[in-house]
Length: 386
Image (cartoon, rainbow, N blue to C red; front, side, top):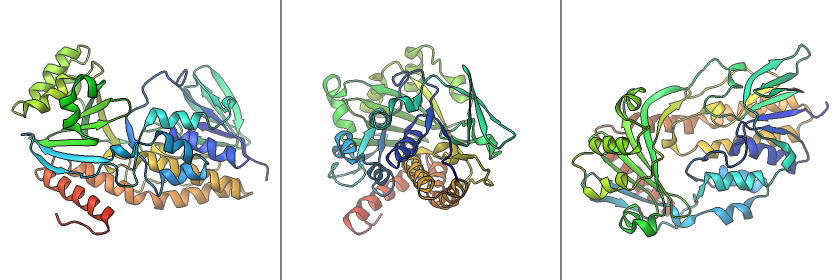
């Protein structure tokens, strides 16, 4: 059987990892990305890349040295505080462990540079996938139609335009919304807050609210204010068109919290954005359709509280690329990839669903403390008591 003509929709980590995997294995593909250029918009915050999935995918793709150049092993720490500012838990060695942090932009950059420049087509926002009578597909973009392709891979995230070809499911709101902003140049401009956040992630819980502050590269910290609210609540409650007004409203939501915790909100920049959290059902799967498949969030978007999103996407891509290049029967390769992926991601989807269901519960602080102690204990070879 001839090699398939492959279109990858989405130029995020998953789509680019598939392109890289195919490239190093002697196959070809085209990546279509809606952004007009690589720096058109922020790519998101920091990611912890797991040894047995994300790092393994990067290793198979020959990108370990590039990964180590951007990996921040010193930023793996965790701090847990209550609303009075009391430290309930602190990771004693932020450089220990095998899940270093990387900025999403830096990860995308090394993946972009690892594939031929002509493989990535920018400014291609997908409108629809059009099946042809011969079993191939055309891609209809905002600026024209391109095709035919034998295989369309949806790597286009939560609101995938490829997913409807194989699955009727749409991601559902989990009940949790995070409001995100950043603190720039924190070490020089806000040294007290830099010490408060520490090396890695700081989490504060109380009054059915949470604050998560996470260190990124270049002395930048992203802050997430976490609420369990109706999906429309942020737009009804805050004036995001006025950063000053939004900041005042956010401070009111945390009235009575320790002053140093409120200083995180006061120090924030003006890019204040609500992030409602969505998820597909646990064990989301679909009947195999020749010529169409999905990876990453397009296949199994889940809450970020499980910490597996980008790792699943990278490993999905590595496995799909491996199947496609190891089997002459490419439709069978896709079917084998899907069967493996459906089973492999059940555990992380279930964990993410449990995590988002219990966040901001009445015993959330105790549950988080238990998780942090267990994670540290397992790294030392024994699970620590709660």
